[in-house]
Length: 353
Image 1 (cartoon, helix red, strand yellow):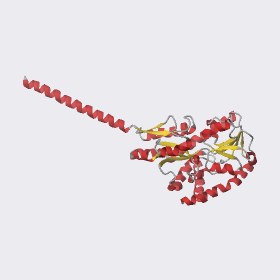
Image 2 (cartoon, rainbow, N blue to C red):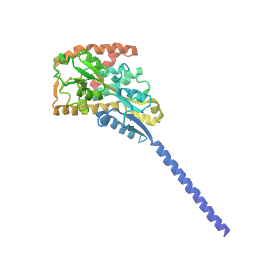
Image 3 (cartoon, rainbow, N blue to C red):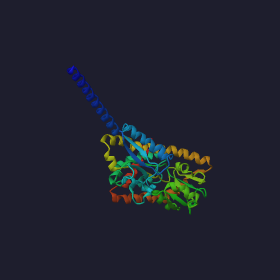
């Protein structure tokens, strides 16, 4: 009896050991799998969730990042921005948020090379301009390291900037004389001065406040923004300039240390859906939003006209020195500005096809 009892006890002990080992192994597998899927990056956004930049550009890109990494990297848009719009480059650089987007021109004097894509009359499609911009950035501009301290995930432009005001139709350049116009910085600030308006350098998010309080008489923005910032009741006149009065350069960047902390496979997956892919998403999103913006203006009774050939000639004559001045200025950074502009126009033409 004693031997039988001992055998039964040995069997029970062996069973306990096996079950324990299985439990430990299962816990280890679950823990490892959970750890692999829990990299969550933060993104600081200074625009409302329904704005086209967020809804039609950032959110689709986030979904692509999560799909490309098989869910191992997730991106959370913070409920509130970590600072004002001009601070967002440094918010990523300093690690207050992992990822940010923003406008280069909101920080006067900091970015010079990005002005290439902001010149007047570059084209009518944000998608073509944005795709071309990324290609030119990688080939000619990246080497100057103006974005030191961050990982550049994308560059893009909004739709061609146009002229809006609450005072009078703009049929000739003299009609702009004396008007106080909100501008976003960068090349459009130079354009505004050349064509005789008083430029108010403020982020686009301040436009409604400036117009509703009478501080500004008008604004330079893409067609999208008149709807997005609820300006269709405040501006009464729109003058659309074929080719665009200007463009605005945007960035999508990530904290360098955070990017480097990801696995090589995750880094490669993020880069695959960023760059030119993101530029195309952003540009197409803006083109679609411009179409909706124009429809909203017309529905609310904004008088929309297309700039005459005479007005276009006046603008070109007044602004002709802006590009040549930029070409001269970028020599100090070792960049052939004339070559950049020629290549940019060629890439825009190619992307437009």
